[in-house]
Length: 102
Image 1 (cartoon, rainbow, N blue to C red):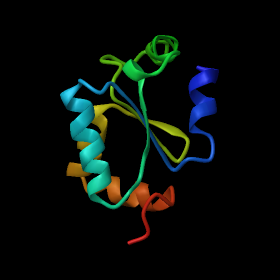
Image 2 (cartoon, rainbow, N blue to C red):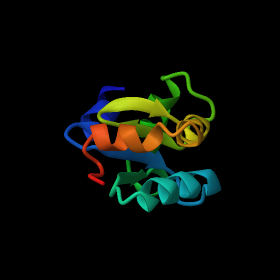
Image 3 (cartoon, rainbow, N blue to C red):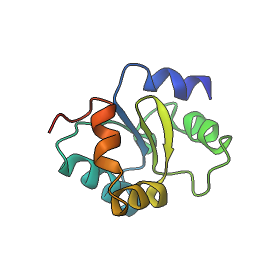
């Protein structure tokens, strides 16, 4: 998990994704729709992607992807992000992390 945490340092929003995953695409689109510019790691396009995916699996989350970090904290996957959005808590979280300003 240290390799994953190192990739989230000093970045307001980080999404671990696969380019062919429709839920990953939906979450990236949602977060970008608020004006955030997340750092996205497409694990199927990275040489060490399988190692990162294995590290993410160690977090105990199922399914593993997408995995979203907001403010260097593991926020969750698609279900957690959509739940935050429906409850009106996603935008304040993005603001707190300085991912968006408005």
